[in-house]
Picture 1: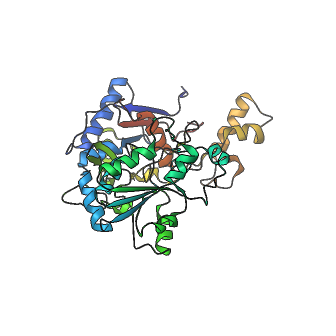
Picture 2: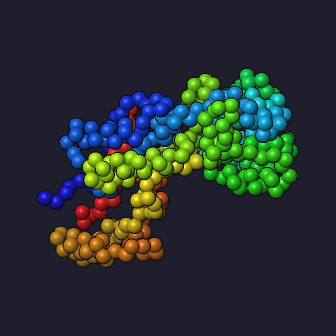
Picture 3: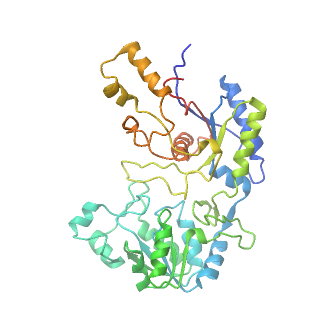
Length: 396
């Protein structure tokens, strides 16, 4: 019988993960138990994905705000530090800011506006237009910001991040000065020791600052990129991808997890005879049309994945074929013609008009987004995702 279902994404429940847990055995057992419980079987080219949170927890990859403070002080001298382009997040950045402020005498906090890098808005463009402010050139002091725009609370969290971040810095024992600007080199008017907190533009920001006379520039990826007094760390990403754990602890992005995905793949092959792809995923890479928030606050969607997930989709657009190549066909003839086109398609469709409108993104970014939406970020209790049929097409 012809298969009538395409891609299926299932959230898989598993035990609460603690440091030292064997995540290979837990993942394999959880996936197989779920399949048995729900009456389905694994297939070749299924995808099993684990959220980065449980990977980092099993690794015990945690650090304290004091660890952050010690590293910041050692690398930037403990005086006046410019902290530029942070995202507006209680979970992602506030805890890091606390540690940074503990390692400084004064923090000059430079916020991008009207929104941060991932779309969290301080202001709207309409507000800027009404005030005749050019965000590409104008530098605003806190006083000018308040005079023009008053208090602006985040649409979803209800937080005035300007006041919130200011309070974190002062409560950590440092002086604070707040500036609103979008040119990285503006911070050099205030200090030459800088932490640039942008995520996806960090290399460019570092380059600009160093070219314009900065004394010390550290990205978030340079803080806790090695253990401090026995802390967790991430040699590649440092504080990037970290989350608040407690009021004084952060969970870092997982490190060295390629062996994990390879071992899960091998064990599933041994137990089922099926070749399953495996990945670790963090934030999905999608944008919220209401809040304008681009979800990707992690440095990458997937820090580790098996080799079958390398690359981008190679798909034909069915509606293009139906409306153009085979516009005079219908019914069984149309189905047969499209099936033949799919079976005979080139291995690389770049530039082929029949592939226009298909999603030109990395497989791990697409699948990671599906996983993130399936697992959610709250109390669903499904940190493992099992996807079937993702690599199927109309002919399967």
